[in-house]
Image: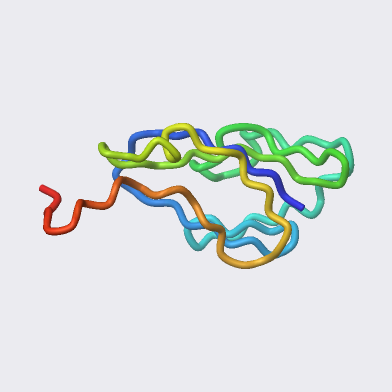
Length: 109
């Protein structure tokens, strides 16, 4: 399992995640955390990833990491105050919306 804490940040870029076991692919770049032992910590500075916002640890068999969650100027509350993600399966990771969808018939500037 993998536990991801999200730290919202106003940015103009997007984040995509795909999990495969202990590997997390972030915007197309794979980061393999399988070498982190139980109770171990991989310092943030040891990973060349601008999206990582803290150290990566393994506790109780779970990887724990914090990622920056980019959002637009009109982000929904679920994005501004995101719940932690617990990933139990592999595949694309659903993230909170970048910003609110325009109301029907409305256009975004």
